Image (cartoon, rainbow, N blue to C red; front, side):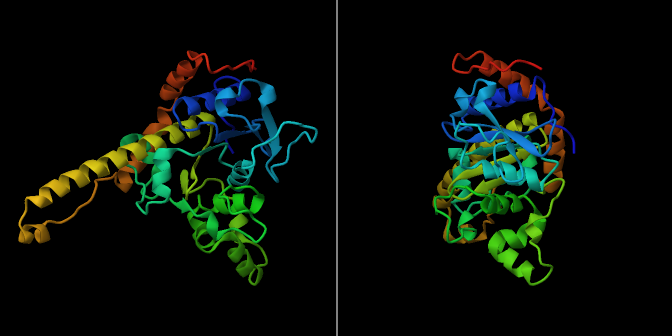
Length: 309
């Protein structure tokens, strides 16, 4: 497992990342970003239940055990995020993932409920691949769960984590509980909990909730969160322009012409293009990160009192 790459101290970068995500409207009062501890891969850092823009010091950040999302220091008085299990279960399942972002981006939300697939629409979003899966939490509720779409316990977090892997398509389709029941009659264990180094997908949409993005380090996951939102905007704009154009064109055609005109749809990135663009983004991630850091440093709203190590 590669350690998280940071330009300052890990916690200083984590505070900065919170500010960048807010500045780019990826998060507002809600949403969060985590970082696997560089010194202990079994724990991770996440701010306490506070608006991301207001995270400013080391005491705003809690270290959690990945195994069960419990605080390493049991005496911590600060209230934690209810959805910290998003982070713990993804980090548990994928040792190659070191940072996770959860967002309620309005631009992206529409693609989790509209029935229109999100696709990589421009070169900065090659990491999306040719398919962006949707996690439907309603398939995973148990009788004791509150149906509020929040990933508020380990089994719901584990169900979300399976959506990042093609090998878990069965569990994602029928629900983690059903998959576990079936496996109890076969090998006696839930295959959906198996550890994998890297996921097949970098972003998963969440029906009626938002999206979750993963990365090998903070810079990469922030890059992916920002450009996931931009991709949603580009795709939505392209669809509106295309529909307006086709409607105007159709009104001027004869019935025979309409029937003969093929509907080719939007021209998204090909499989070869998404791979090439994904690699390009990974090689150049320092460029936007440097800009974004300066942007938040120039804003009085954002305060980072964490000292460099």
